[in-house]
View 1: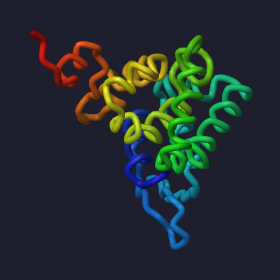
View 2: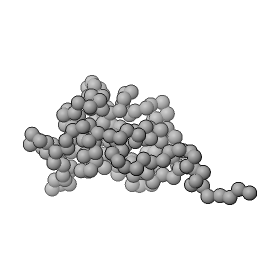
View 3: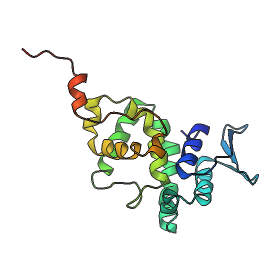
View 4: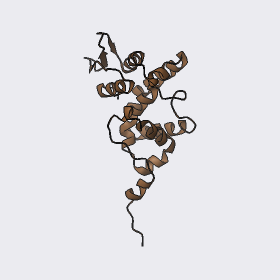
Length: 179
């Protein structure tokens, strides 16, 4: 999740040139900007991208110190728990349940607008959500609503095929015969 491709996708979302993004000797993602400033670590790179960006998402992510702290915590949570946890089926199920409960009465992770926290978690769980069956997606209705809302933005899905969240899809998926 905290890899070169994800940094590049988030940079594109923010309308910022990613610069040279690579893994260093210790396999930590690093970014060298056009001004030859090098930063290491996923959360630190996202902070630097937000400072360079004039996008609404970047402004939402830095609206106040409290928002910045919450966004940073979500990014760290995505890196340390969500991304690795999504590869273990038991942890992944708990993650999906927790996010589904969280989105019962929230539209975004921090505040009332999309932030870097949403982007980090979205990309961290993308493959997990992609692997869900239509029935699973219905079981995680609140999470599915949040995910589908984000993926509808061209700057987020960046040409990737949109995942299907319609319930009509269930009829095609479920094999059965009616007499």
